[in-house]
Length: 335
Ligand code: SF4
View (cartoon, rainbow, N blue to C red):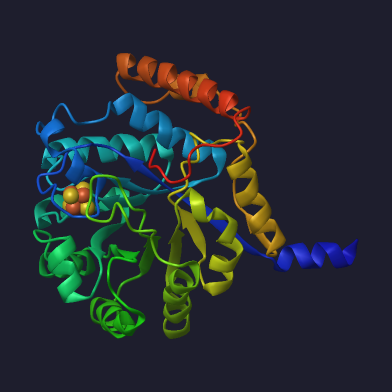
């Protein structure tokens, strides 16, 4: 018994970082790997493309109750104004009960200064450090403004995260440029996505990167940056490799559509993968949370908004109960 306890105490913890999508709008809309680039004509009005505040807040509350970290609030460039993002971030901070990250493009210093009390850090959607590949896949999202934003983050003591999509045409020789970028910008966290080919984009016929190649990026990053916060962001088709991702150096996972696939066989696979590799998952993908609706009613928010949050939460919980009976979803499609 004592031996078991010692083993458990020594096991490393792994957490899930939930990215909450807050708008379908993007003023760029032309990154050649991105789902938004296939929807540009349908999402031209930033106001109409915004997700409802109640649904965002209900999801943030669920993160807290399920033991997930609110990884970031995510949206395309130009989807929120200074005032609207400040208001939303304050509300999320209150219902989630802690700081989180923001991934909504390059922000001006005035906005960063106002958001600082509620944020752990900001994301730069770098995607690749191979300049030629970057020019093709993100023609209007240059890296220099992201680096400038990182400098402002330093001024305000905010952490810096970057996204990196493996499989867009780079090779492992490009690791050197990633290494230099991380060092030059003192990046605190890297999220490694494996390219998920989206229909209607230039990658629709691609199969995405091989798993060993994807793992190699994390392994090299861990070797070179022992203290780096490395996040694995595989789509559902790769969750059977999560233990390899953890062994390659990832300390947490993201991207899994954890509400949509709550308590499905995919959710169970992740939990087993983590357990079988000797790690402990913080939170759950399979056990329904205990929700105290009175807790929401006590929040210092508009009464209508609180009622709407309760209503949305009810819908999410219903969906999560139902998904427990589903066997699988098509793993090659985005949710
Ligand atoms: S900036 Fe982001 S959301 Fe906009 S098209 Fe590029 S990847 Fe997609």
